[in-house]
Length: 110
Image (tube, rainbow, N blue to C red):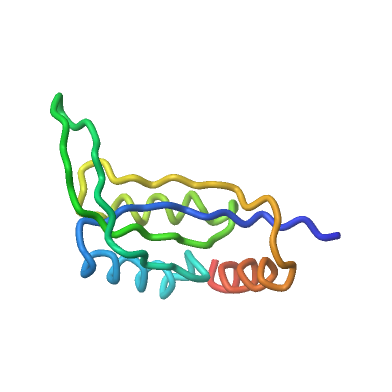
């Protein structure tokens, strides 16, 4: 069985417009095969010594571990937050044809 090196990246955005811009930009740049924009969530977090509460739009980005460093750098540059949440989680299993599609789509541009 082929080993796939697919990962899912979580990235919260301040609003739907930023989320759409980042999602489309990552796909257009070949850094992601697919990006899901989830419904807004309420985030509670510590920032600069204070507890903050904000509405955010989460992105679920499907890419590969090989391309992840490029995606991370691109997201960090394009994101409006000073310190954006960019977290990669390995995909340990999945439908082989889907994982192959992610691998094919992301690697065709990079």
